[in-house]
Amino acid sequence: MLLLQAVQALQLPDCFIAAGFVRNLVWDHLHGYTPTSLNDVDVIYYDKQQQLVPEELERKLAGTLPDVNWQVKNQAVMHSRNQDTAYQNSTDAMRYWPEKETAVGARLNSNKQLELAAPFGVRSLLEGKLTHNPLRSKAVFEQRLASKQWLKKWPKLEVIS
Image 1: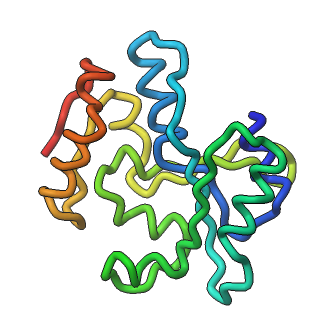
Image 2: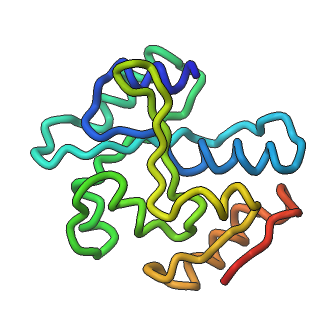
C-alpha cells in the first residue's frame, strides 16, 4: 500500500504500478511464499504531450521511498522503442507485453480505492499460468522465461506457449 500511495500522490495521468509488482505478489500467494522482493517497481503512465520527465518522477518517488528501485516509463512514447503502432493509453500498451500475466497494473484512485488494469484479464494469472503474448516474438518470451528463472522461483507455474 505504501508504494501505491506514493505513486498516487504524484497524480500522474493514466498511471499504474504494473508488471512484476502485481504478478509476483499473485505468484507468491499461489506458492504460499511471503512476498519476494522486487528488483524494481515499474510505474507506467500515459502523457502524450510528454510534459513529465520520467527521471524526475523517479527522483520524486525515491524521495518518498528511497529503498525502492523505481522505473518510470511514459507509455505514450514506448511504442517507438518497441516498433509498434502508437498506444492509445497505458492499458493498450500492456497488450504488447511479452507475457499476458505481466500485463496487469494496480493503482489507487482519488477515493483511495484499488483499481486494476488487465487487458487480458486476471484469470490466467490467478490460475498460475504463464502465457506467451503472440504480439511479441516467442524468442523474447523464452529468453525472459530463462533469464528471470520464473520456473525455478515459482515451480507450480504452467507455461502456455
